[in-house]
Image: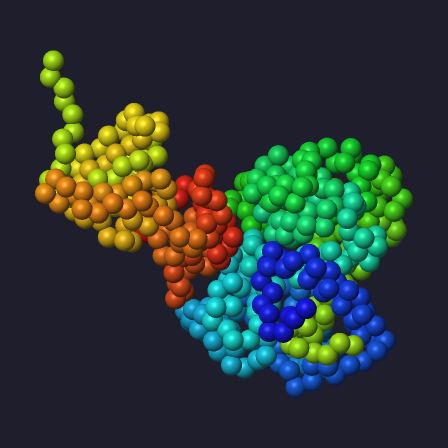
Length: 310
Length: 150
């Protein structure tokens, strides 16, 4: 399987076998990710991180991944000091970064930005989130978390909770979980339901997702509860946001009804949707999930920059 | 009893087998009436051999290939007859390519293809019947394809 110089734009660009390969590769990266072992696999390589939109985990974990692999990082975390503010097109910014680096990580507020970047770049593009579009490395680390905790993805009962309309992570994840034949239940406020085209994609893989607003019922059988934040920045108007914010909350009272080995995941940042009291329970997996971004991104960088197997 | 019907045209284009109810959308994409002062006839819900259809007749204008592609987006079963001296001199059955480039804008206002970037809009044809297209950039499917035609 050859990933050298491959763009990572959308999870849909990858077959099930390719995803499995990346996840297996990521497992082998764990001792390097947590600092137990050291490597200079990507020595002399430069990664450009272009963040046109704020990010904490994604940017830090990409940069950490590159440093852990012995490579170097250039880039910006805020476009205010760049030529973009002077009116430069994304295409031109990419042409410039392309000539300075061996791979480019991009986060951008507009959907399709990473796909466009790939057209203007010789070096591989890694999409770190394009507006309400795709966030493939988040999807991979979510799959990795389920796989490492539950030993398999197939057959797990996964509840996706929250803003299923605007949340980019849940769209990619619903697709990928269907590819792996997990059982899906979608729980959301009425106005933030999973879009029809995402449900249709799940059905194409033979998965019949259940949509409900009854979290108490859904959680009883669940193996995985994936919670998302209601993202204010994705709402077209503040009124719609105010109507739904705080409409659900995961706390210990709710979790009393869940299976002992239910894992609670969240792409973070969380605001009010998971009570901090959950952090101390065995259900809470979201911080480990955030760590998992590191081995997964290390695996991707190694594979696309042509590093040798460990 | 006198019957009022649309007569054959001498020179121009007849677009036949338009999905019933879509004739006005065809005019919209051809920018009619803004781009012609000749006679344009519209027939809606005409009984044909394969059920109802719309027909548009445009006098003194022959459609170019790009216009044919645009019509394919809204009336995928249409046939286009070029008429000269009352005879059909060319007959096209519209055929949509697998990829539609530069014909229709993405309906997603925050799609990068709608920004000031040096790219044309680009869509993949997901399904032909019913017609569904998906933006290459943002992966969204426009609900009303005719609305975005450039």
